[in-house]
Length: 289
Image (cartoon, rainbow, N blue to C red; front, side, top):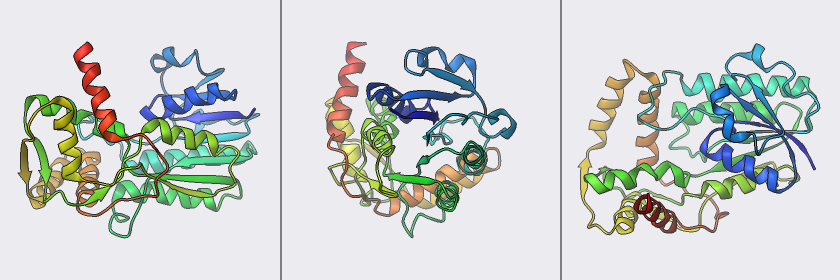
C-alpha cells in the first residue's frame, strides 16, 4: 500500500483516479481547493487537504509522510469556461509549486498527467505549459512517470447534447486522425505508475478516427443523420484572437484546438474501451433521466 497525495481530485480524471486508488487499497490524501468540492470525496479519500496550487503557501507540508504524488491537476479545456487563469498559471506554475513541496517532503515518486505532443502542436500555450512542467519533473531528482494521453472521451461528451439540437461544427476538412482514450483507463495507468519502472508513457485508445468520424459516431449514437457546419480554420483563428482580448484562456484553447484539429494525434493503444460505446452509454443515460 502506498500513501498518495492526489492533486486534481475533483476533475473528471481525478475522480476516476481517486476511486481506483481506493479499490487497490492505497491511502489517499486528496488536494482540494474549496470545501464545497469535498463532500462527495470523503468516502474515497482518507484525508482531504484544502489548498490552491497557484498559492504556494497553502501547500505547506501537504506532502508530509507521503510516498507518491499523482498530479491530474490542470486548467479545464472547456471552451465555455469563464476562468481567466491561463494554462501557464495553473498547469506550469501551480504544478511547479506542488513539485517543490514534494521535493521538500522527500517523496519517493511523482506521477504527472501531461498530454500527447507532436512537433506540429508543441508550440501551443496549452502543451508548452504541460511539457515545460514535465521537464521540471524529469530534472527534479525524484523517481517519476509522465503520462501523455491523447484526448479523453469526456472531452467529447458535450457534442452529444449539441447534436440533438443543431448541426456540429467541423473545422476544416476534419481529416486529422486521433485515438481518444477513456478517462478511466488513464486513471488505471496513473495507479499502475506507482509501481511501474517506466518513466514516460503515451496512451491512446483502440480506434484511430478522423475528426469527422468522431462526429459521425455522435450522430449514430443518438440515431440522427449527420449534420455539419463547416467552419474555415481562419475564421476560428480570428474568433480566438478576439476572445483573447477578454479571456486569454479561450485564446489559448482556440490555438490548441486548431492545432490538434489539423494534425494527427495518435498514441500507442493502451485503452480497450471504444468511443462509440461511450457515446452510446451517454445517449442511454440522457434518455433514462
